[in-house]
Length: 165
Image (cartoon, rainbow, N blue to C red; front, side):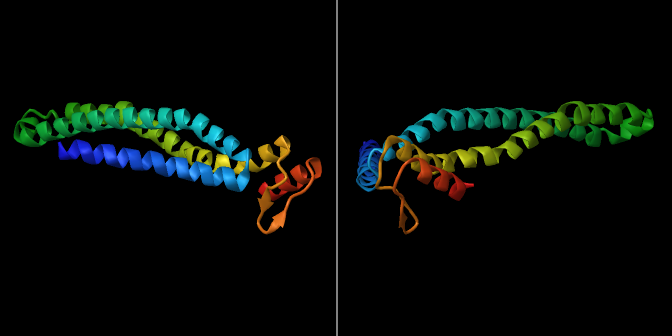
């Protein structure tokens, strides 16, 4: 019972923190805060899908590793019989087949996903990068870049894009 009460308290505190943060952003940036929140909400499903795919690949990789480990344990426990009947080549081919045809392609897939993971970290920076141009397009003149206030729409959008690049 205490655990349920604690979880409810923590979840309500998190909601209040999110609301306070959004109100503070709105006071600081104006309507452009909605742009940043919208980009974050759009990027959440993408990040969730990538995380689910990575988890699925890791589960498959662990199953393949278990298969190869069981095969190696079988070989090591029956090494005398294998040597006696000269089955070394057949068991070596089994182990290499599991390694080359199952484990290595899975490791390559995981490597490709890990190479693409900077894209997901870029998605975390995307709201802050898109809030400024979107607020300029919306006509909000309160935008600040560093210590210099940005005035005007089109000219300042070009400066902003040059600053972000």
